[in-house]
Image (cartoon, rainbow, N blue to C red):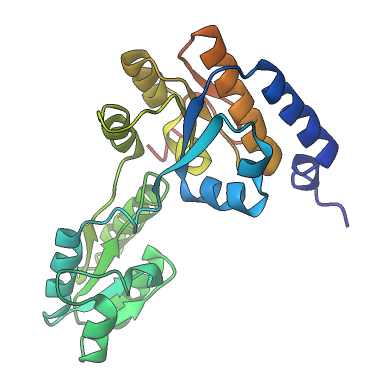
Length: 260
């Protein structure tokens, strides 16, 4: 069965044409950073690194928000779990190490730690219990609006035993820290699709203008990624540095105004 919006972005013939164009115009060594973990996964899944010219290097950036949650934040979460509260968290936080232990080990020692699939699930726990429920809010710009919506709903329902420990991160400041590091050379950014649906193009325009590094918001299918790479290389070869959208079927320049 042909799946619309999927199969057409995995067409081998189109991939060959994009690769041929990349090889044709790419002359100088370049280091392009993919910021999103989904990009990293699909670059590996489809073997894209091995298809590119040897002088086009892809390097992985911040990846997922759990990976960039600090040890100090994990320690604070663990300390919270030692109190007389119910801690609700996404499952991928459970084994992230703090200074001495992790949430999974604390649960084994008797702490009331529940794995949930969304912040609304955590609110549901609070509605069923008198005990305070604290949701561990970890995520980038894509997760923050859903947590905010849950807080609004809790206020609307006058739920007084629900709160959020916010450890959310912003992608543009992380990118700025990377591109300004003297230890890294980044010639262009493959910008995250999910986050950019929320924040739009403007934050990357500022980054491109300030640091003279091209940025292309890119989708996640193999043809999206190859086209995003091609757009970056075209800019680099022409000596330009601007922010562009490859993922036009999902991302608008202004982003999602309500979510912002």
